[in-house]
Image 1 (cartoon, rainbow, N blue to C red):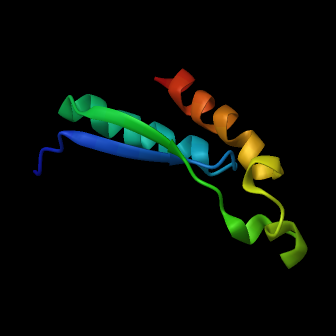
Image 2: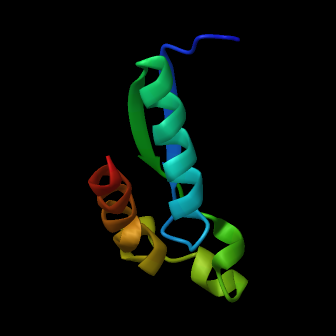
Length: 76
């Protein structure tokens, strides 16, 4: 079995983040690997193209990013 030293977990705040995070954390624990959690923004969640033109720091998805990461970190 391959031993990983680092595991990257991406979090976007969606319902799918939880199960993926549990899997990544479990794998990291078994392998005693370092975990990094990174927020991602799925642009396909934008309702229309006009929303994509707003500044990133004003988008709802961007504003939810810290919560997505913190939720994943709280699972550790």
